[in-house]
Length: 306
Ligand SMILES: [Zn+2]
Image 1 (cartoon, helix red, strand yellow):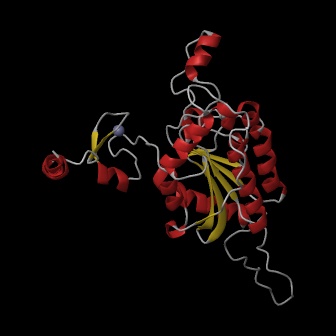
Image 2 (cartoon, helix red, strand yellow):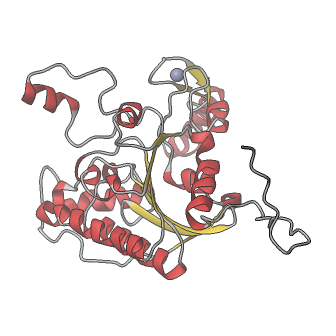
Image 3 (cartoon, rainbow, N blue to C red):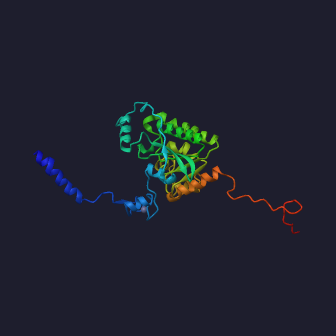
């Protein structure tokens, strides 16, 4: 028996497995339904080459995309007592946290990194949607405060990239307290006279959209991102009216003045470089040429034609 299970079965399994196709060779676009070769999709930064649909991008990939040469340093975030309310639904909150930590290799749903963007220092706080839907609990609040203080310390702009379903319900009122906390954090950056830029990605909803995410000096959004407070279905049922086409999408928000620009993923880095440069160096980039001085000592002023 042991010879069969220990030797023959693994050999057979290895033979069968080898003939199988890797299951990650093709991806399907959730908007147009087209099949896309996995490598091609990754090269296109997970933007569908057929319809331009922006699929969600893992947080590490996003940081690589934005920082110079894809290089950045992460800071360690303060550790705090998990599960202050001893919350339990179908599972214990501590268990959910442990699972998310094991799956993502991260402590919580926000990552704070600093590095150069176009040769200028910048601090980015990016949400990890894979970690409990990027929900905002106390640890995320701590992360945003740490990012804001780091930006002030380094005299660098703060860029926050939300990808979040909103407050973390397992932390109850403590998660709601992160709304004013995060607002105070980004205010510290503004008070220091530093730019605060928000890059809204899919999805930015709930308590996140109702706090720091809508307070950027400049609000950029990725095409097609869902950005809103309550879900469209809930609003429809409450007001008993049909909502307009494209409601709560990045483009709709731009057209109604809630977002400054909708920028395709491939142009995000260049856009950020241009914005940071404009905000940090407001003087004209061209050399100021003085007017030629005439023999009389006065600057030459072209004669008026009356
Ligand atoms: Zn598509």
